[in-house]
Image 1 (tube, one colour):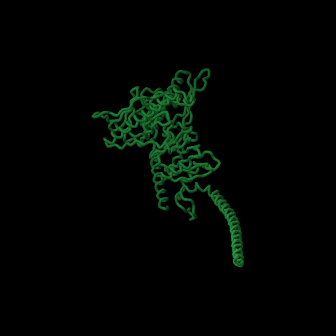
Image 2 (cartoon, rainbow, N blue to C red; image 1 turned 90 degrees about the vertical axis):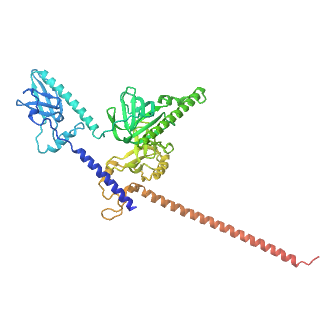
Length: 519
């Protein structure tokens, strides 16, 4: 037990150190540098006007007749106050120490203020006045447009910061290409719906939409591939969980899904109101049942072909099917869904946003609000990376608790249960700062719960009370048993006395018969 606890501590510390190194590498941002020297200034800068250099993303403002450049990232906002009779005004507000920066500030601006805020002088505000409103209005519009472009560029750069360059797709030409058409992809590339064809090639998959948009998924970038047949759902789908995110529809995503709807969702909702013995409804159900089976077979055959192609070209790709009989209902995001375990994950793939938890990343599972009177409980999944917030699944029916605990036992995952809801943000801060969290003794040598066992401590008093009640009932049962035994002994003694009396009567009758002479 002690070796297991020590290994857990070493593994958690290794993960924590790795994420600290990654965060320290990301925290090193470059300095803001509009121009290296004055030689790079544009040649046509006016001396007493505001000039916007779009290429260098800088603004020249006149100070005592000298143009001074400011990078656009240091400008907080621009305001045009109401003009008076003779003049028009333009105020420039800059980022400076001692004021809230906001969420839209780029990391370079934050690092400059934190590094030089205590040793340098910052300009907070500049106000300009002009008798010609046309020039200040034009400068105001150009500054606003430059700020908009800069924010878009910064957001895109932050989105693509952790992207990994993917290899190019190599098309398969020497044999027939496995292909499946009329598929809908999620997330959508553009518009409300993206439909097209999915093909398997030498080193990856390619999806071609009807608008000739392409999305490539390399075999080496696929971490988990899942095939969910259509049983009680309205769709049959193939889902890929990626190792490194890709950009689809200007957004970064780790999950890409291809599906086909067996029946429209609105039709599925209206089918519950149909008559029981309507022949048309029965025929429709039979056609729908045949369609489900046909689509399941088509998707299953395509998955087998993709596995054969990837194996032929020295790639490892295997499709996993969720275990529906082990599934349970819960609310991971906003609505009640069916959550199903697989060999490596715990997933819900039918509703968006997708819910996928890799079992290799799970450290411990805790059940909240587990009481006899409760109709549902909450499931909190604690990850091995303690820097990440725990994942919660709410409103799980109480009748599914035993099945979930048996599944966790089969997966060799530890779990605890408690009656109260925990403040996980402050609790995880305490766990991260506790160097003896996985040890059985504290710094003073006093025994303490090792690891996550302290979450089970809430039920200790109830268990002791329940044990005492059981002893009490056992003692009462013993007293009742003793009373019954006494009654049985009394009955047996009475029966023995009756037997002795009967024996005595028979003996007296035999003696009388011996004393009488024969006739």
